[in-house]
Image 1: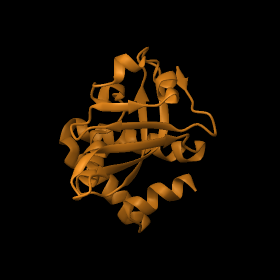
Image 2: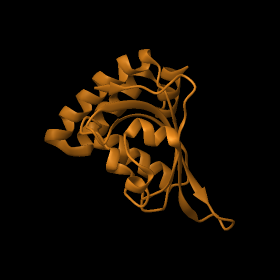
Image 3: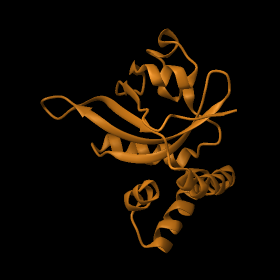
Image 4: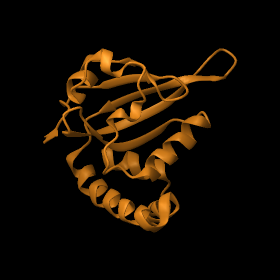
Length: 161
């Protein structure tokens, strides 16, 4: 069953530098069907859905480890094997010396029209990853961006506008 965020709902979470959850808000708990005790200290990928291309997470980690924010559409899986889509913004948290001390993510409801574009794109990327790994998935994405004449950020943000 696919679950949905409300129009004004925001999922908020924080992780340490290894991606282990250090903070989750109530909306995250409710939507993901977990208790706080079940999530804190666990890898954020506890909610990773098998329909999510590894390429997107590779891109996400490259960006945040370079101290850049990233927006991405993500499908997650709940404790009870339901799913939910989010439009995510992930940013690194830095200390006073500029060292990354963790990551902060805010997710909101994605536009239905955006998902009509993203779902088939992700399916194509997943198919490519099966035979050619994340390199093949990235080629699908970069070819699309080249054809559209936009950067990743421009493309993803335009879908949500």
